[in-house]
Image 1 (tube, rainbow, N blue to C red):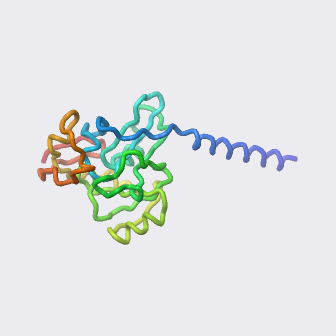
Image 2: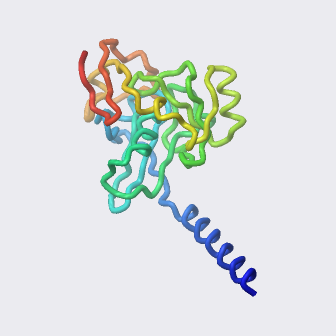
Image 3: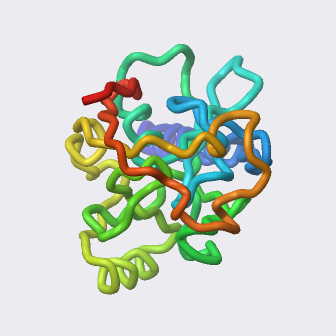
Length: 205
């Protein structure tokens, strides 16, 4: 009888967990006005996959110009509210690295990430390439280099270590420019380096 009661309790608990996952708030599409949380740049003006985090009690998602920035936020304990959902672009559904998509989101906690590939993100820093399916991530790693990791196995150094970022063209900043790098590519970046700290603050050299 006791074993039967325990089995029911475990089943109910598993069911609650499934409901929690199923009831995650849906991701929001990227629009022409979507601004990145850390850098305050227009997200559509940047190549590479993006991330978004939905917080409890916050009306709008936090968007990130690079996936590594979203993962860094997830790894840091300093948060303004509990996290309800974390989404990343599925690179396998993107037209290209320069056109990563506006609504091809996948659960960032369940995604597979290629770390150390020969790719740069929207801010010009080394990027993690996320995929909904492991086989797509493994194929990307064979073509671009790097290794495949789950969210929980991403090393802290891959996202929290300070890196140099190029200074972006003014057209990438909020409220300026009308054409997205999803159309133009990434040649509209200058090369003067800036250093991004794990908290997302930029410092000049």
